[in-house]
Length: 138
Image 1 (cartoon, rainbow, N blue to C red):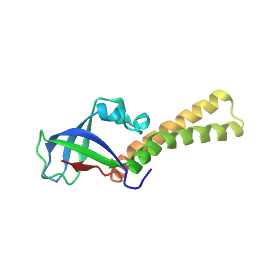
Image 2 (cartoon, helix red, strand yellow):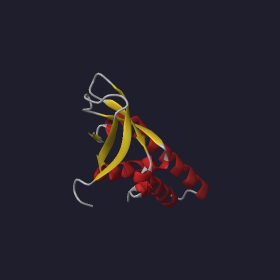
Image 3 (spheres, rainbow, N blue to C red):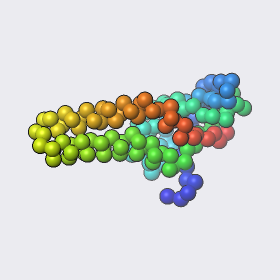
């Protein structure tokens, strides 16, 4: 992976706001089939996603654009959404198992820990959202 490598998706500006942001509807299509990150990208799983893009004050609704994000940010999203909860699941299972809990209790503790992990991620979504920057290419 080279520094500055990007993931891009075609989209249409749905609306702009007065604060310099725009809502862009990403259309997952043929570009996803050639992307090497498609197996871990949730955008490839659905047909339509709405993305909020900053610094887009000169865009107009209906305009076709390309939304780009650095590949490293995509990997960060995968780590937060999938790898962190997996690590919590495995750690909770091992710790509860070593502590002498039965299999059913270990599973219950593990799934509860993952639920708490996702709750913390959801509660932190505004802070996490600020770390991801989408860029527009008209």
